Structure formats: structure tokens, C-alpha cells
Length: 547
Image (cartoon, rainbow, N blue to C red; front, side):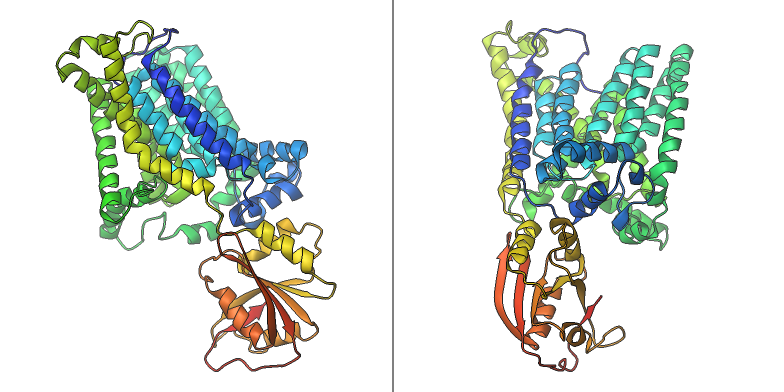
């Protein structure tokens, strides 16, 4: 995989200095977790499944088109049983997987890389905005990154010295991971193919058999998991339509497919890699994205020249993702591509490690320190320490803007604060008030108003003046009430301006006596005193459909 020589030594190594980056990345995640930010829409939808269903009921199709590995759902449900439904309790499992990713990255670097490569690998994981965010969200994506990174590291150990014990251990981890991570399910076939193909190519027939046979048990457990849970998401027309044109290629022919594939690096650089984070203007983000993909390509070239089988482990997830996206099985975009991140981060780290080793050899007076690169920290002489520190500072300096962006994102007020908005609505609500929620904001009422104090409430959406528009719908539903509490909530496409339309229509029926904003501005509550008028909707304007 890397450019170093694996070994079994237990004494301190230069790569151990990367533990400082592990600590920093852990602190960033714990800080975000401890802040207890309010849940947002996606979290609320999966959390309602966890709150309202038992372990057996979490099998089958989940509400709100949600999907997650069944083992992860059960683990989350256990957290609910033990600690309740507070934000920190619900996010504890994602936090642990997020921190675990840093530890596993350090372990891989310690075994296969030197100081620059280990610092780069751990640093990429520590400050990547997606990895930081999903370490403190009620979603399974932090588990995807953890398990794929762990599996590639353990697969490298199998290639290092194939044996029945190592192969069985890898398959056991893969089986557990497949119940806790979608990414592990998607990555395992490619890794297994590389392990089997490499041992067979080397004519290590017993090792090839030992790699293949435990895979039968993995297939059996996967089959059970699929029947209990996964098949419902796999057959979802809603999800297929949602990702069409985003994570799936267009259906308009080979040229469109080729253009889509050529555009994937830039799309992935924007999300989930967030290579534009912390960089001003348009040019610097493009340069950062181009440089990163050059590092990935260089790392793969170095790895293929020195250890082709290890390099193939890094290529396998990327190749699998491209095939699955073209077949329209798994989208290759945004958070659903997060399971690819460990492979590309590892490839970039290999390139930086190789650059560090090259610099040690060519810098005058430091060539003799190359032998200290992976040696004991305590036996290194001062020149070796200088080279090591320089090699450590280079990737850290490059990652500084992204780390600053991750810190800023963690400290920023959430755009939507359903918790505070619903709490205020509950405080001012009177018996007999009508509550209207714009679109998906109804999920906020379902989650943060569990005893249904705000009943009755209805969903309100804007509609054009043509088909589907009921000009008197809002008038009719409000005719029996004196006050309306209207909540805007998240700006979900295609209803970003729905709250403004609703406010205008309610303004025709009464007077807005309160307008409260929560979070960074998206959560708006209107308190409207109705005056009994039945104002007509302006000609050509948008009306409100209430359901």
C-alpha cells in the first residue's frame, strides 16, 4: 500500500507523532457532539423510526423513505433504550465511529507509512468537513468510512502474509461491518476479489482457498440482512428518482455517460471531499481539487510500481463505485459516495509519503537520516528529527485552511433550529390555535412536539394558479380559528420560498403580531391574529394548498 516496510516492531516510531493529529481531530468531533445541536430534517426522520419502533419493527421498510444498515439501527435503538432520545445520545454511535476512523488511520499509517504519510492520512480524515459533520449526525455515514478504512487496512495485512487466521479475521470483520455499514457491503466484493486474485496469481493455492471459503458465510449473513432490511431501499422508486441526474448518469447515450464520468472528479471534490472549504474565490478551490487528484494519481502510480496488490486495494472501491453508479445501483455523489473517501485519502497519503522519503534522500546532509525514518523516536539524532518535523509540517500546512473551515462549520449556528422554534410555539400556543407547517417542517413538529401539544396542525405548500390550486383552501381551513402559528422550517427544494408565500396569504386574512427567527435564519415562526376576512387571492399569484 505504502512506501514503508511493514513490521511487527512495538517501540515508538516517527509515525506515532501523528497521534497529535488524532487528538486534535477527536477534540473537534467531541466539541461538535457536546454542543448538542438540534436535529435537522434527515436526522429527525431516522430518529422517529428509532423512537417509535422496537428492534423487530426496525426490520422491513422504514418510514419517510429512510434506510440504514440493520445492525446500525439496532445499535442506535440500544442508545435510545440506555440514554433516551436527546441529541447527544442519538449521536454517540456516529461520534464513536468518527473517532475510530482517526485511530484506524493512525494504525494503518504506523504499519505501512512513515511520518508524512501518516500525518497526511490522519489529517485528511481529521479535517474533512463531511467526516466531521457526519461524526455528529444521526446518520450511518461515519460508520461507512470507519469500516471501509478498517477493511482495507486488514486486507493489506492479509496480503502481507496470507494465512487462514488472517483471512478468517478479515471475513469476520467484514461480516460485522456489513451489518453496521453500507460502505462495507459495497467495498467487500472488490477487496475479496483482490485478495483471492493476488494469492492465486502468486500460486499460493492454499492461501487462495483460505481467502475464498469464509466468504460463503459472509454471503449467507448478507442474504439474511438483505431480506430483513436492505431490499426495501434497493427497490425504492422514490430514491431512484431523487438521485437521477445527481448520483446516476443520464440515460441519453454513451457521450452523455462519458461527460458524466469526466465530471465526477470535480463533483466529488466539491462533495463529499469539500476541497473548496476554507479557500476564497474560484481559482484556489479549483487548484486544490486538481492538486488533490494529482496526489491521488501519483500515489497510485507509486503504489503500483512498488506493491501492485496493495495499490489494487485502493482502486477497488473506486472501480466498484463507478460500476454501481453506471448500473444505477448506488449513487456516486454527495454523502452516498463517502465510503470512497478512505481509498482516495490513502492514495494521496502514499504520494506525500513518497515525496517525503525522496526529499530526505536529496536534501544535502540529510541522506544518512533516511534509515531513521521508520525507526525509534528515542534513538533518532537531531538531523533526523528536523527532517521528520519538516515532513510533518508540510501536510499540516496544506490542510490548515480545511481545518479552519471544519472548526468554523462546527462552531457556526445551525441554519435551522427546529428545537428552539417548536419550543417557542409550544410556549405561546393556546388551545384552539391552528398550526401550519411548510412542507417538511412537519417532521420538526412530530419530533420536538412528541405529546402533540400543537395539534391540530396541517402541512402547507404553495401552488401556482393552475391545476392543483384551491384559491379558497387556506381561507376554509382557517375560518374556524382566531390565531395561526405558521412555521417555515427547512428550505427544501422546490419550496425554498414557501414561507414567504404563506406569510403573504395569511397577511390577507389577519395581522402578523409576531415574527420570530431561530438558528441562523431559516427557522421562522409567524403568529397571525385572524380578523375573519375572506380576502381573495391576487390574480396570477400563488395560493397555499393545505393538507
